[in-house]
Image 1 (cartoon, rainbow, N blue to C red):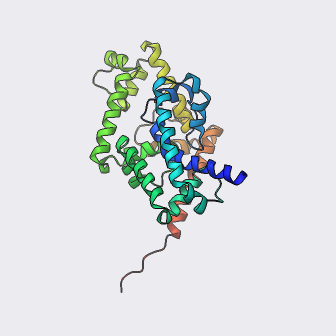
Image 2: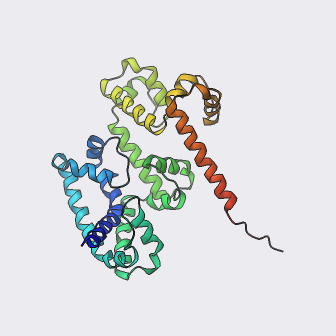
Length: 291
């Protein structure tokens, strides 16, 4: 009985991973996520658990979307149930282990499961045309959604036209609803959100900003500090340093002894990741040169 329950949980985790983007990123649940689940990191079912905890308070659109997704998940679970029992029986659900197992055994999946996965992926690709670009250009990027977004930004010139159009559409929509838009039109004409000049302009007029804009900027700063705790140190020690990220990094290095503990830990973590990448490159087998 316990084994059967574990398999059902695994099946749900497997199907859920494919549906999470459809529920959270672009759908009618986005506003609910921002309202009830701020600060919760994606992964491990945490976001869906948060929405479930606030089920009674969710918007009608989000509830309806949840019903649609649940129906699709049910079909996907049934289509792949036998494959999970056969190929991933001893795999513990969580942290993407079920998905990794299915990927490793992709060639062995039943026709029904393959078909259900292909249809699910096709639907998500229609809703988010950047998925293909993300798989191609950012496959090995780990971390939160922000890391993936940064990766896409770095490869902007290589993105498909459909992805470029989607990102442009999102930017336009976010600008319409941006609580600082009225302030921008008043103090920073011609500047747009996402532009460093726009942010600097708002900072210069901070005392004159509307309450809504101040709140938005405070939340943005709080989220940025969570992702990169060295921001406060940078403002403290490197405020007047001009140039690219390299100059700021040099400045932090010069003030290493005075950095906050959170920043030191983040720097150590990043240094460790860079070292891992260097080690991985050393271990990569070199192709024999043609004689």
